Amino acid sequence: MTGYIVASLLELGVLATNQVITNARSCLRLVVRNLGNTYTTALLAYTFSLAGETSTRAQLLTALNNVAISEGNKLHWSQTSSGDTLAVEISSYVLLAVLSVQPLTTTDLSYANRIVNWLVAQQNPYGGFSSTQDTVVALHALSLFAAKVFSLEGSSTVTLQSSMAGEVVNFICLTSTSMLVPVIVTFSRTLGVEVKVARDCRVRGADLMLNITVT
Image 1: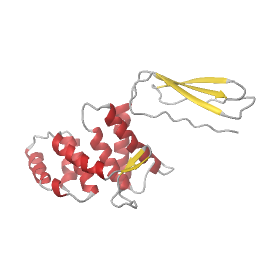
Image 2 (image 1 turned 90 degrees about the vertical axis):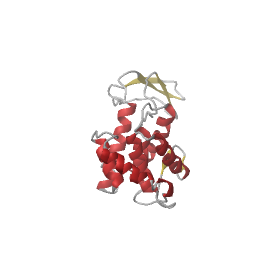
Image 3 (image 1 turned 135 degrees about the vertical axis):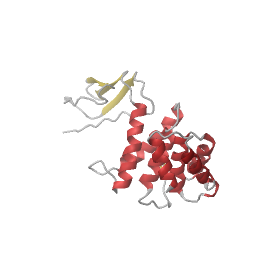
Image 4 (image 1 turned 60 degrees about the vertical axis):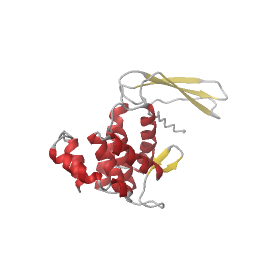
């Protein structure tokens, strides 16, 4: 409970030097070395990140990295090896902890991007997750990530080319809209399609996603 309250107060702008925050952090610091609960570790990593306590934050993130579940370009955490309903919330707190420092490095954003890849794969068709609580925390984390990587500068060019007929279609993704305008592309003979992206945008740690529907 103390971790939740301290994090909430810091999010509201209460200074880390406030006596209430200082006393609470002293209390939380006593349990950091004996944590065996992944959920609590993730929550405290976020709390100490907000407080700017770098040494304790680093200790907690190291512990979390040691139990992270890596699956290709995805990264997440769980209370058990078989997965559980808290995985979304735990992973979201880790993402918040990673993003709640300045300045963010390319390594930080690449690490965060792997967590985002896993989180968005867990969303249901309505954009939520398994419960109200994990949805609130996950959307908070995803919103913070979006704010960190967003830029109004630059663009990406997507090229579609038929491997057989040699026909080429180019279209631009502007970061001011962060999306491609839907277009209908017709090839006379399409046995294979190769997609290449050339970008000059400055968005770090972000992926360009392209959906292609063949009719």
